[in-house]
Length: 274
Image (cartoon, rainbow, N blue to C red; front, side, top):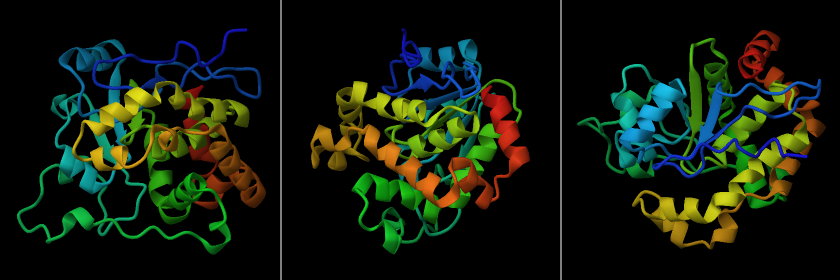
């Protein structure tokens, strides 16, 4: 049997971890629709040919950026920012001082930017009952616990009935992107085991992904200070996160309902992915 994950990769010059969320089986016997939502690593190094393929061939019209304000400022304008047809939205999954909802507004540091803006991230806090979880699980629960508003807003952006495709991304396209995508796929009716398999697929390209990020001054220190194995996504990480959502909320949909992403919005996202 051919894996539903085979053939979903989108090979570009400037990305390493881009793939289509279409083609995944659902619990009711259907499949997610291709060409609607993509997931990716950083888009800063797209080539001219990449932009032409994404916008022209794949119909990309929206970018959902989960990076922090500091990352965006350090990395600078990506080539898709110059494409009028593409809308950019920014939802940081890490706590920051201040609130930003549009990436364009923070692409250039304002003249009165406070000293120490690079240290603008607030310390991550881990709920006491989650302190015994593995580090990656703690991080993912931190996104859900500390930035639930940004998680929900990112899903609302993906659910909007806009024409064309959307891409959701962070730096590596595995952690912050992985959590948002896991919730989106759950809404579409994709079973847990397929959500986990999609998450773990990044392991196939982890060497190239680490090398790409290591070439950027923004991410180089983190890449070289840890070995590749520590960056590699493990299926048991997402399995544990989904299990916790099952235990505490009756599943991902219960978490979404509890955080204001109700039945109508879930139906809209399901329609976008189905």
